[in-house]
Every structure is written in structure tokens, then in C-alpha cells.
Length: 559
Image 1 (cartoon, rainbow, N blue to C red):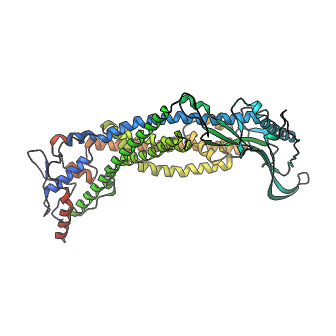
Image 2: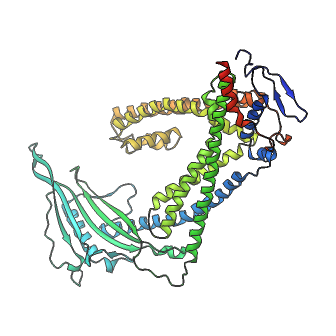
């Protein structure tokens, strides 16, 4: 090893008439053709598709497949997005319908919930819900119907939760309470109602508001989403399990009333759409099948590329250790692992899974709309992000990609440090300002509020909402908000931008000077064969197969 030359030092080169590079080594028992072949294959591995086509005439099938995938996956996402939007809109509109149907005097409370303050209001609302449920078929303009189980209607249930025993006397400042919670329920069947819409027997229930924790009304309704017929899709049958909650846990004199529903989407048992032949369904299924095949082909090509890169990395590492007694750095090893191919592999896997879910939804074997939308959404995002790889083949675009890649480790370290300060402000604001400010009521709201402040959103409204509180809280809120805004906008963000700018200038300097920045790049730079030189053709016998044998032989002789 004493006779071999340093990698980044000066090297003697000999140029043959055919312009192929020749690197003269003084290491004994070394075949220069093996080194040339390895260097040339490394250079070919890092070429872009256009250069590879010039070097060996290999058509860029992977590039053309990625362009085709972008078109197919985007069209598939748009098609599914319209269907998913109709489903979500239908669920939200039905929830709003339940609020207007079953809550007495309900208005669209965007700033607050439905609140009751008197016992009479609570009894009237419960009776109102039961009456509206019994007369539902005469009231609603939708296709709502009662659920049946084994030929019988599912009843409406009214359940109250209360402390098992209590004796509370606020006037004497005394109380006794048994914290165990009991539940008492009664059921009402729609068939028990009379023709005039009243109950066969009057309701007999009472509420002990001193012990009462909550009153929950449960009932189940069914309907069919017919709007999908206009978009050549089979309608789904929906089951809404509605819960109307009267919350009295705080015992503050305000009983919050809320309506929630759990939706189950099923395939309708018997359906018939007149004038449909199912041709559109077959076309959609065929289109999804084409997307799956295209993604599978892309997955195979990218896996092959990653495997070839790993094999070439192992070969280069063996060569370096044998002839230079050096270990290839981790950064040079990672150059062989194509991150873009891994990104495409993840995207293809998600697309295949999402397309399978979509086929199941179209054939009514499953109704996993949310899972399908997440898979297809992430896959489409990654596909479009992958386009940056091909833009990077152009020099002016490539500097952006190199900057992002080089700045990423420093950005992560910087964000970890800034996150410590950010979390400190979050916990402090939540504890101190939470009881007095809606935006600091919960920890997740605090993080959202502070992130909005960092971006300059809603600053004045955040300051104004703290005016009606005590002087100490008001003074603390001013110090808290001013210090946070000053620290993060004027210091943290400025340092963050300076960090990326410094990386950009460093990358730009290296590109202008064309200085090899790694051992791998320095080794490849010794080969100055152009793609059109003909040296990359594989017609002649390759020397890669003998590289490992030569390395092992050289090592044994040195020993």
C-alpha cells in the first residue's frame, strides 16, 4: 500500500486514441482495465436517463413510466375525490338535519353550543326529541327510516347517569357524595305510538339534578345516498347511530347539548338502477387495474435499481479497502442508495394498496373511504414530489435539490433546539392563560395558536381577548405574547433562513469551482469519457466479474 497514490492527490493519466480514460497505478498485481471498468460503471450509474441513452442507447423506460403514472394516479385521485366528497357532504348534511329535527329552537351556533339553564327546558327538550322521533316519517323531507332487527324496530333509549347517593347543601357548605355512577334507561318503540302521533302511555321519568351527570338519548336511523346515481355510481345504504347528549358534569347551571352520530356504510341488499348496463363500472375497474399494473412495473424497476446500487456500493467498498486500505465514508455509501427510488417504491406500494381499497369500494365489498383517501392522497403527493428528481437533471433546478439535501441535517438539529423553547411557551401559556383565553384552552389549541402567531396570523385578536381579565393575568399575557413573537419572528426565523442561505451559497460555490467534495466523486472524476465516446458499450468483455477475485488475490499476496 505504500506504493499506491493518495486518492485526492495528483494522478498520472494516459489517454488512448479512442479517448477512453487510463489511470496508471503503481500498485503491484493490479489490472488497470479492472479499475477503468469500475470507474466507468460508477460514472454510468450516476448518469441521468438522457446521458445513459447516449452512452448505451438504453431507452429511459423508467422515466416514461413515471410520467405515465403521474397522469394515471392524478386522474384516479380526482375520480375518487369526487366520490369521497359526496359521501362526506352527505354525512355532514344529515348531521345538520338531526340537529334541526331533534333540538328544540336550534340555531346554527358557530360560536357556541346549544345550552339549557332550567329544569323545564331539560324536560321539554327530552319530550321534544321523543315526539319528533315518533313523528319522524311525517316530518322529514329525507329518506330516513327506522332500523329493524329481526323484524322489530330498534327502540329509542333515554339513559341518565347520576351519582349513586348524595346530600348536597351549598347554603351550609356541606355535602356527602357517593362517587359510584349508576345508569337508568327506558326504551320507546315507534310501533307503540298511536295514529295521532302521541305515545300510548305517557312518559314517567324524573331527574335529580343535584346528582345528575348526563342524559343521553340513543336512536338509530337508516337512509340511502341517492346522489351518486347521477355520477354513475351505485348508491350506498347508511346507518346513523345518533346520540344526543345533555352534559351536566360541571354542575355549573349550564347543560351543554350536543348531537353526535356514528355512521356505518353498507352495501344495499337489493338494488336496481333502470337503464344501467354496468359499463361505467367495468371501465373504472379496468382503469384501476391499469394503475395497479403500472405501479407494479415501476416498483419492480425501482427495486432493481436499488439492488444494483447496493451491489455496486459493496464492490466499490471492497476495491477501496483492497487497493487504498481505506474505508469508504458513510456519506459516500449513501450516494449509492437512491432516495428517489425509495420514495417511488413507497408511493407505488401506497398506490397499489389504495387502488385495491378503491376497487373494493366500487364493487361494494368494503366502505373504507377514509383509509382509501389517505393511501391515495399520500401516494399522489409522493408521485408529484418525485418529479423533482427529473427536474434536478437541469443544472439550475439541481442547485435547489442539493441545497435541500445538504441543509436537511442542520435544519433538523436547529428545529430540535427551537422545539424546546416552543414547547416551554406552550406549557406555560396553557397553564396560565388557558382558563381565560379560548385559544389556550387545551394544549393542542395552544400549539396551533402559537404557530399562527409565528406566521403573523390573528395577532391583534389574540391580544384583544385578554382585556377583560385581571390585571396580573393581563400583564403576564402581554409579556408572554411580546416575548414569544419577538423571539420567534425576529430571531428564530431569521436564523432558520440564514442557515438555509448559507448552505445555498456553499453549494453554489462548489458548483462554480467544480471541486470534488468526496472520495467517490474524486474517483469518478478521473474518467473523462463522454457518454457519446462509445466506451460505455457492453459489447466487449466486462472486467467487473474479476474485480473481487483480483482484490482477494491482492490481499492474499500482501499478507
